[in-house]
Image (cartoon, rainbow over all chains, first blue to last red; front, side, top):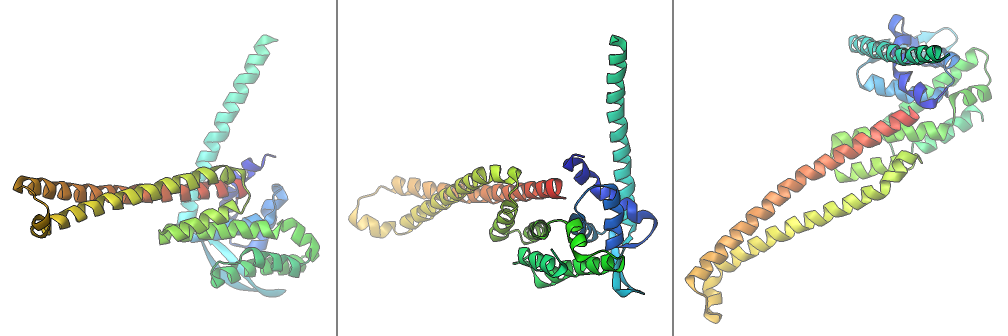
Length: 111
Length: 190
């Protein structure tokens, strides 16, 4: 897949992954890179930036099998941004589909 | 590449950013390696999933420097951010670095002009102040002195306005530069 596509939606993906539950960095990276082929390391700078912008709060929690983990929790602002981005994404997908469908219909007419 | 090598490279690419920020970034990756190991992944496997540490570090550093420049609002910070961005080797930034320095040169030239005009005005006013002394040597009419005084005031005012205009132009240029760097780094490298 085109790298620009991936980068563009990465922010939405991170926000969406955290919308239902708090997760630690490793889990976020894993969930995203399981589905999108991207180098996981680029997600950490994004997490830092989104935290600074007030979309997440972080807290440490002890784990059974090792050192404490840093959990990310989506704030009210984060939820609002996620909803806004999701809306934009849906509009965009619809628009692209309309164009693609119009094209196929046109091709069907020519046949 | 194992964990130690990965973290060492990351550390090297983050040279020059505040220690607290650096430690915090490295701690994130250390934690990642530990959690990955807990799930039975080898360090090599984890490192290859994370990607190139030099790249990750450079992007993180550029973002930090851009943020710093936005709060500092001084020329040095803007230059550091631009140079860090240029270090990423991104085509979008390499192609504008020449014109960028060209515009910086033009701005410096214009600043010098504003300063020159302002100073010549101040100098003219000073000369009028000393006119009794000058008149002892060079014959000058009263009307000539009044004219010279107004010229001096005019030049000073023009230099001042020119300077104020330059403050706005320079600020605007710095803001545009940072916005461009930020957008490029985010779009191309995430």
